[in-house]
Image (cartoon, rainbow, N blue to C red):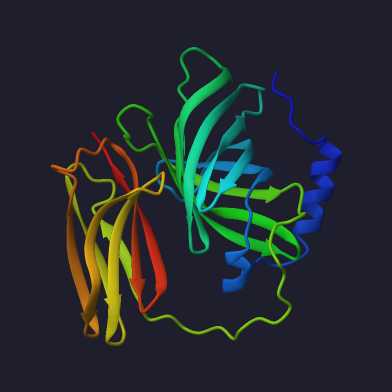
Length: 265
């Protein structure tokens, strides 16, 4: 049976401590100094088909290594009966999000009839005092064809909080952001549309990256746009891309917006 890194008592103390405070955003300067390298523990809650209720929960761990904006590592998912899988993961940081995908099972102990869904998506990088958190709803897919599973939500806390980021005491006032971006359809097979809205005349750049941080398409390049809503076509045909996770990265006057894109076979 797979052993958790921390004892149950230590986990209980950690969960009790972090629940006492509300999560907060990292400042721009804190994000510039972030280091996600290290061990994380927490929960993975799997949705039912309606995506409104939880079917089951797992112990979940990350062991991450950061190099620039690129992330590599291993996740460990553990069922209540002790069945587990160690799964290689990779990803990149864009703004205040960690985009990741699991892609190869290293070790596992499970019922032969059970198949692990690989988790993927964008985890929000948050802080709880000096504790670093990775939280958010994330999707899951069958490994070979990227056919969607039911998805779920992830909540992880870094075990060692040393060298996380340079803490800033003062925080800027919250500004309502009228800009937005989304991708539809998503997942897609050959082509999709990236929709974005801007509130003011802006200089816009829109690129698509693979999960390893390689730029695979330039859709807008320092283009001046008037206020409004825009639809930009993205086609994977002719780009030599395999099915998998991609990231749309939109820059509006230097401010970054991003969204996961999943191509199925």
